[in-house]
Length: 236
Image (cartoon, rainbow, N blue to C red; front, side, top):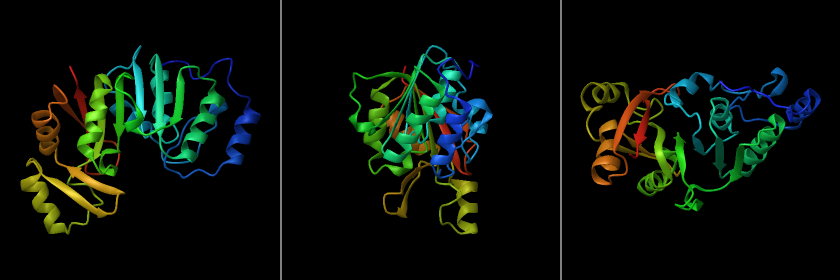
């Protein structure tokens, strides 16, 4: 792992001032210089899963980066650069301040939509973590992800067995026992916020067999909420 600091790192007083100035949503905790930390959910248990494949000397993009946690972790693991994008201006502003506190020269955070990225902008590794179920057009989103990926897209998504879906215990039992390997898709009932859920077989059938976006997919267990999976999608 790379050094967590550099000569451009902010003073402890500046970091404390940053913490006092902002109210954080608790979604994502991030290490700050001088042993300080943004309060929130600890994502460190997810790091080894997300970065199961080496990122050293790779360019990385995190789509929906929130405060930029995985961008920082990527450069600490030797990535040549890490860019993060998010559509929420508050998250982007805070994430940019965090980059400044660390003094990173190879981390960039922008307020930007995935579909604003041109296909000439390509990254070795693209992270698409817990975003797929929030988009209304999953096919177009995955086409864009594949188009800007040189090597590997890491896609974390809730399956049809996601713990927050409103099944009764009997329906969940049947799904888990008999249907988890069938090519099933579930459409959520909450407007926009949570729309699409895929089984592993449905993910493969749609994005590999039909659309041919990826050459192969490896599966990993998500360290996030129950019923989620990580697909390591190789474009070549």
